[in-house]
Amino acid sequence: MASGFDETDFVDGDFHAGQKSSFAAPSTGGAGRPPTREELDSRVTETQQRLMELKRAQEELERERVALEEARRRRTEFQTGREEMLQSLTRGVGFLEEAEFNARRDAEQMARTLGELREALTKVQSVHEETWTQENYSVELTRALTVIDNARMEWNAARLKWPLLNGPQTTEDAPPPAEKSAGLSLESLGFFQLCKLGLAFTWPLVLVTLAAMGVLIFILIGHK
Image (cartoon, rainbow, N blue to C red; front, side, top):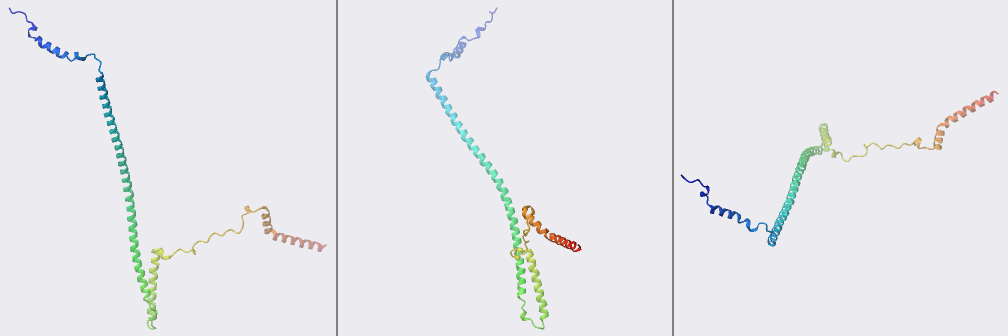
């Protein structure tokens, strides 16, 4: 019969021993050993370098933040100014276009009125009374009156259309200023002034009463 099965026959003891020694080697070098001064200096230097890098990064981020804030402010200023100018310029252009249209229309109407007045003036100046004769006197007079009436119509129409033809306003049509009252208010008068005023109003009645009493006394004395 065959002998019993032994698992150790298939295990390489040297291979396992090498693996154990290789895994345990790093831990046996400095386990539990405090850091040396050189290691501490190295770590301090490394930490300071990292702090400097972080500080530079912070400063860079701060500059970037300031730049972004300035860009945002300028962008807001641009948008606000753009909207403001768009509204103001659009409104101004509209007003000026309307004013220009009205001015051009008024200028055209004024030029037309000026031409009509010049034509009427020429017609009035063309009337020469010294050329009339006894034979054509009535006809020429009728024609001249027609020219004058037409010129007057043109003139009145131009005055209605253009008030500047009426000249500066005079003070003749202005209402007269309110006249100051000659009498004084009774509330502003003193006692003696009121007495004088009352006497001035009642003295005719006093004279009539005295005269009537004198006549009555005279009649009574005469009867006795």
